[in-house]
Image 1 (tube, rainbow, N blue to C red):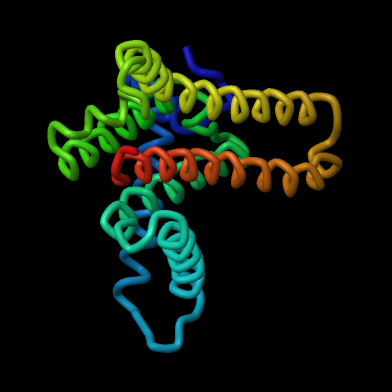
Image 2: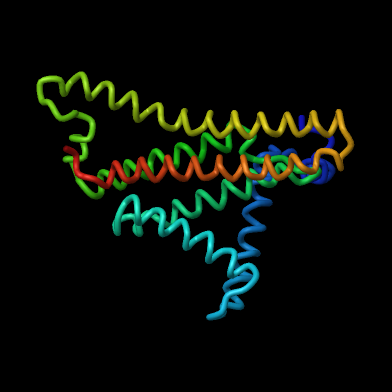
Length: 224
């Protein structure tokens, strides 16, 4: 059952459609991003302003960050890294809107993204190194390679779990605190907290983005 104060689940349930509210809000964020992207690309200008200026700053800054840490090879994986950050960022911020909930406050949303990240960086590792990618799991010393293989496999398998729980715990915790503040104090009194929560949600999106970048960097590099 959804919470009664959530707008989209109430509308769709009234239509006889019982769709999980994290899915509905994920669709909502996707729709917003598609509309914003369409608006920007239809009116591209050499002198950016408004949304174009916003996206150029965000995307340009992220690209410089990725290239500085991975090198020129980072441009190959930048599209998904940029998409991950913007998508998670907007989903996190959706929780600040009255009547809305952050899709990332649901563990299923985060698990789906974490599994995609896991498959994606291993795909690049295999694509770049072929069978030699296994060297990333064997360590630098041959006689302890079997032990290192087990440790590395467990380490890699735990990455999706870590990505999922870190984002879920932080965003769900913030949502609970925000609801409690609304309950205990007038809405106006909680407005200063919006800045802090907005900053925290931005940081959480960046952490997910940065960890994904680190995993991709490791898969693209040659094993030592």
